[in-house]
Amino acid sequence: MLEKLACFSAEHKADEQLNIELAIKLCESEDKAGIKEIVVGLTSKKDIANDCIKVLYEIGERKPLLIKDYADNFLKLLTSKNNRLVWGGMTALGTIAEYNANELFKNLDTILSAYKNGSVITIDHSITVLAKICKKDKKYEEKIFPILINHLETCRIKEIPQHAERMLLCINNNNKNEFLKVLNNKKQFFTQSQLKRINKIIKNLEE
Image (tube, rainbow, N blue to C red):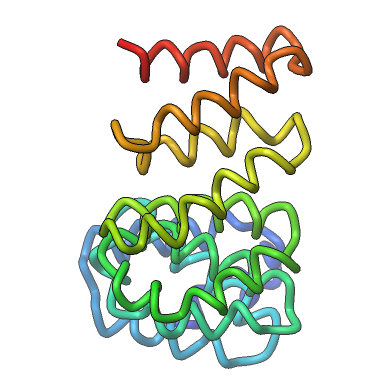
C-alpha cells in the first residue's frame, strides 16, 4: 500500500492528488488492512510519514469511522518535531474527535500543548478538536469552554470568524450568551466580509 504514496512516484513526488486518490480508494473499499499499513507508515522516514498522514486525514474527512481506532497514533504526532505531522495529526483528530472524546479528554494536556505552541493550521484544527470534546460531556464543557472563550477573546481578529464557526457545534443554551457577548464586543473591529460571517452566526443562535 505504501508504494502507492506520492513520494514513491518519480513523476508526481510532490503531487498530493495521488494521496487523495489513495484515500478515496481506501474509503471505497473500506480496506482496514491497507489503512493499518498507512498508519504504520507514520513512523517511517519523513516523506513517507508526511504522505501517510495526508491519506489518513483525507479518509477521516470522508469516512471517519475507518480511522477512529487510531486516535492514540494521532495524539503521538502532536509532540513530533516534524510540523507537518503535528498539524496533520491535529487535522486527523478533528475528524474523529466526537467518537474519541473520552480518550482525548484524558490527553487534553497534549492537545493544549500543541494548540499553544503549534502553527496556524494546528491551532485551527485544535479548535475543532476542543469543540467536539466540549460538546460530548458537561464536565468536559466546564473545563474546555473557558479555554475556547479565552481563545476567542485573545486571538487575531481575522481568525475569529473561522474559529467561531468551528466552535458553533459546542454552543448550547447554557453557554451561548457568553459566546455571543464576545462576538458582539468584537464587532467594531471586523471588516465587512468578516462582519457578514459573524452576523450570520449571531442570527442563527438568536433565532
